[in-house]
Length: 260
Image (cartoon, rainbow, N blue to C red; front, side):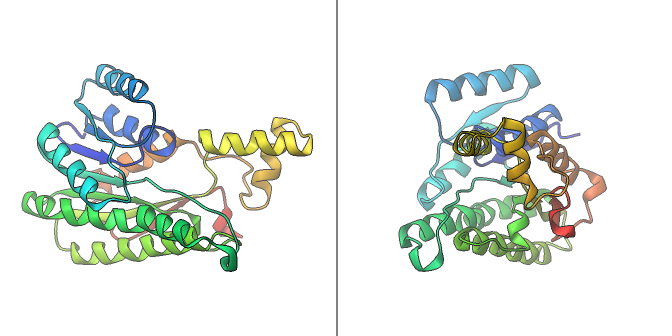
């Protein structure tokens, strides 16, 4: 379905972003990977994806806090892939602290990566999408785009912000072939979350299974993690003709979190 399309997926060297990049590549899209990590491992990953899916795979390690590097990333995508048809704004960070003790530099970083970077990327790619009258902008929001949790003020603010941004872009492009939507995951099993499970198990003397249930139990009624490849499948659907009139929505993938 996506043969001939080119996608930029931020934060895609691991976790959710990598799951989405693989799903788009499996459906035929050329991919620009972005993210942090060991240079040799990233190059091996790039070569692996290109060989497995038979698509072009580029990489740019742009820092999402730096507008000039974001601009360079889009220039790289246009140069190496020819254009940008699909953007998945996935890169994100978290910091946990009560408001009165929240470090200002951490607030600034969370807002820069989670909210300002998607704005800058969208601003850069939208003219080309409008000219071709086809584009998909997919923002990875969160259940925290709808509800809050204690000690996560910056993250919650950024994800509520990305939901508002998604709606605004959707309205501005409503009569065109460009759509903008958000995916709102709850707990997703990524390497970062696995570390939290391992730490909880060690701290409280629990088995991995019990630590998983304790972590999930407070918020996610299914007591199951969402998997990155499930989010990838949803991203592919949002790029399909079946989703062409879905505009400005946030789709929860949260095991019942928001149903409570």
